Image (cartoon, rainbow, N blue to C red; front, side, top):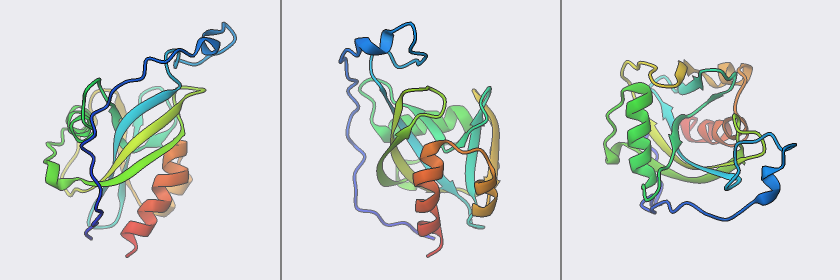
Length: 168
């Protein structure tokens, strides 16, 4: 299966330094004090059996796409390359990943925050090893994914998109 999307992910991330003083209230239990947005690069990774790879970080029940936070002045594709190497031992080449777009949802592990994801598609058929903060990495069918505890971004946006892309 080949995804052809004519979009670019070369935008460099410049973190916002806006103040959200109301978030610093002692009654507000979130980790997003300087900004309610967490910018990430993530990958819809699939194999030839049309299964998708989901990961679960340590100390959370939520399964989601592999990826992670963008560092200051980092392009999404560079963040994705760094995170996939750290988390799963994947050496990503730019041409392997197809940019799917920008998606957002409530963050799974940071209450009160929104995750803003630059999402890529990547076909991969190689052994993977969960590293760093990843407690579990699983290849799952769509039916299996629906039975897991999924992050909102995965459940509401990535899973429907994966069905559309991988069912063609």
